[in-house]
Length: 191
Image (cartoon, rainbow, N blue to C red; front, side, top):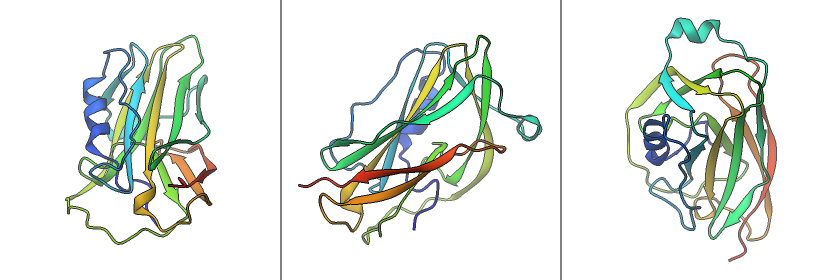
């Protein structure tokens, strides 16, 4: 079984740096599997959302502010991938922040929306990368804004029957509890 931060591509890391305060940014849905074959991730942010480093002290004091919510949208197939989107939303009238956990492997671990697919992985070669220890990161969301974390699950990386379903456990890796988590179901592409 995979781990929460398994194989999220560096496209996500680039988005977190490039999008800070830059308005809407999005990648086209992945029709094929990317450089990290199990899963790859991107993000879309509302105007004014910014990402910053957070100190461990800030992270330890952080609690879920009123108005901050997270929901997972129904999975959407795109060619050989199935896209799962988690939306972190500020429904309140004031700016709030979300301090989340990063870690796992350099350039493949910055997506706090983690998925674990209940299907065995096919043998693949993934480049070795150094382990990166958890560090806090902060998303600052103005009133009414959102961050959409999109993870594309690559069908070719998993053992499955075309057209069958698999359960996916998801979790938003906020620094402190409560961490939103749950399950959804994906249907594997038929072709």
